[in-house]
Length: 322
Image 1 (spheres, helix red, strand yellow):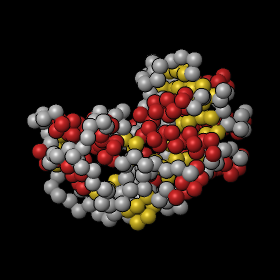
Image 2: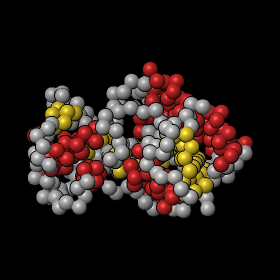
Image 3: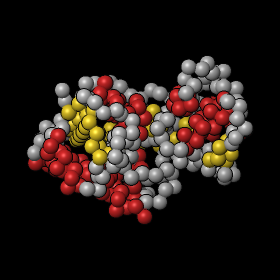
Image 4: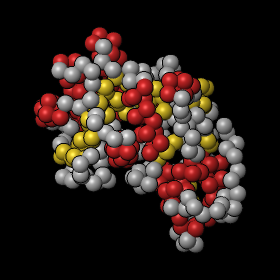
């Protein structure tokens, strides 16, 4: 049985990743800063370790003890759109970058065959996004979080090029689930749909619906991350649906499927805005390398977040912005 280490197992991505690894017969060691595992019960296939990833010395000692075959770094100091990282930049760099360096250097010094998979971010690309975005798109950060993710990308490239480490940077666009914090956009939309379906009179507030986005399902992306680890661990990949939505059109479609008008349940703080240029994310490299790409739409994602996946919608309009 292969040993897998998951850093950030108590987060959205880490929980789904650990569950998918267990289904594939891995023995999983999950690391989180909380005292107990949040999503995955401990047992023969899963062991939990409480460890603050800012403590890189203890992380290095843990690696020597567990000697993982694969290590997934999906931990992050991360906030919703508009979050200011200046106040937490030391913690962010320790968790998002230095902990990755510990994994890579352990592989170099002690376990050259260990595979390292890192959860990167689309925040490395300059905003506003436009045109076609793929793995060759030039990166330029617009926030400290993006700077950290570029540092990690370059770390991986260095260890892959100079030390032959099988490591992959996953450039992930927005990915959602019921485990996502309510400060994020899609959970708020799911809450508004739940209110509509239960005929509650409450309204959910969002800043604006005038923007473009590519949304994927977190559980699906984490299962794909394992395919990358097993089949193409020495390449970088974009993880996205490849379908761009205007947020207003997406929300309209989500509510219309159940015969509801989103205006009754969602209140925008800002007046109508210019959403800027559209963009398209290419996942061609991913599909070619592992024969698979994400397929869940934002409609299905919000359904599952509301627990209405089995309910028959009034209609299912196609994405008009593919």
